[in-house]
Image 1 (cartoon, rainbow, N blue to C red):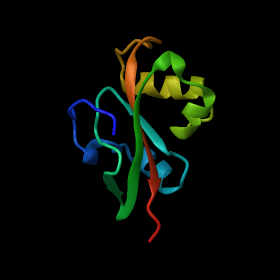
Image 2 (image 1 turned 30 degrees about the vertical axis):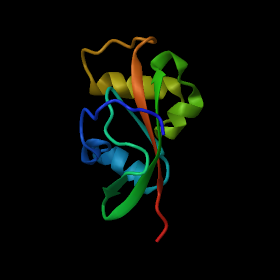
Image 3 (image 1 turned 90 degrees about the vertical axis):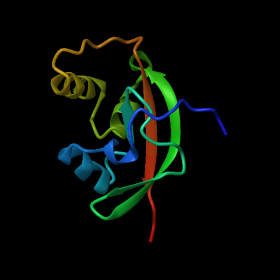
Amino acid sequence: MTDFPEKTCSIERLVTIPEDVQKVLNGKKTATRRNGVYAYPGEIMVLDGKEFKVDALYSQTLGEMTDEHAQQEGYTNMEEYKQAILSMHAKMPWIPKMSVWVHEFSPIAK
């Protein structure tokens, strides 16, 4: 097990934007990037009564992201992801060296 930093928020806050919740429920979003740690691998996130397990947690810089990473987030490509993030965080500059925590998750079959 890797040593992770202390959580900066709780798993309930990992995916909260209604459009993103729908993307997760529809299988179009399998990862969320945050400035801090919201969940550790093995934890369960519940969205609309459905359970999703956090499979992986790792650090990544915005500059390391590819179109494939943007697709994990539910976007077509990096430019679409970048514009969505900048529109949510009005004064935030896009800094390629900025490090974020990637939370990857998958649905739990019942």
